[in-house]
Image 1 (cartoon, rainbow, N blue to C red):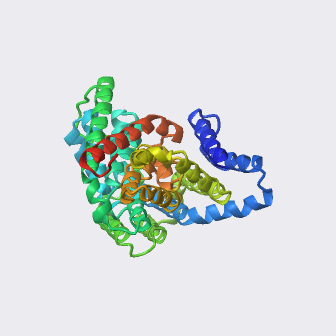
Image 2: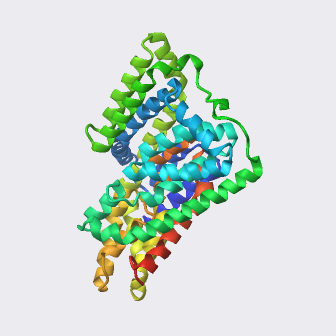
Image 3: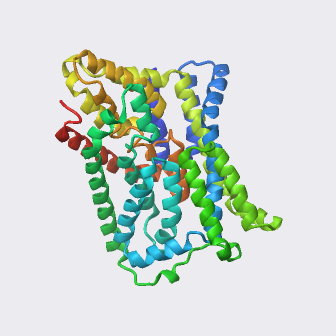
Length: 428
């Protein structure tokens, strides 16, 4: 069963990176084929897939209306002053643009919400990348990398899982990882500098003023007189999102409808706006529900459970002292194999018990896991909705994004692991 699970993931990655089939097709057909080959009755697959869809349904609904909301804000010109100001600061220099993207992403992501971070940062920077002709795969990549170290904050969903699973608190999980987080930040800034130098060499430094940027929105959709209303609505929405006032799907649904009717009271114009973004919204939402089928089959067939057991058993007892370090070094690849719930509620407890039986601190497993698994790794994983939002907003293919970003993400995790060993957060 474990072998079947690993092969399913492998075939999926090969299929999308080689661009032999579309992502949505791979998400649906590959796990079904794998389950049938293993002899799982066809009738049992239906409930598994439905369970997976139910799990992602709130996220799918949220993304439909979140994408619509920020698309409307781009159409009406809410971000135009910010974009023009950014252009004046960076002065048409690709190096400054990519470094600025990394820094802004880290600051925005202090709230620990990847979805909000992606929508805010990409909405601001995408027109700059298009105007300067910087490769958009670098936008997706640097945003994905920049959220990684910051996602270790104790109020992120991933950290909350680790803390609750090990029945501890942020003091024992987050605080020892502060120096590794700093190491990760330095690494991300290095990558941003490296990519920026490459793009500066390819494109040069363009000289122009912020007003010259083509923001590519439909002129008839601009609403300069409503900019303060739209800014207040967006700030309120993000504030309520952070506070958890309403469920996120409800917040974005109501917010999108308010934005639509107030900015475009004419029914015909509303229809034009909805039609102009329909394709993008469908591509995002359909991939989310397809991902639900993928994770539903892997979970329902017990493939994920078997993979977790196999990974633990692969470490010889004589080398148990290496388990925390190995957990950290494999944490980013593990993001491609396990959902956060499966890993932190399935794999982490087993690893923690294993090291504890050898007299080691079980909390090291929590610290090690957070150095990559669904922190650095979540923006490249096909098992999280945020990844599909990221590639949709940046207009990049999943395979292209993973090919460009994966090894650099592994590098982030390796650097953080080295800093963790030096700081004593992990021991050998």
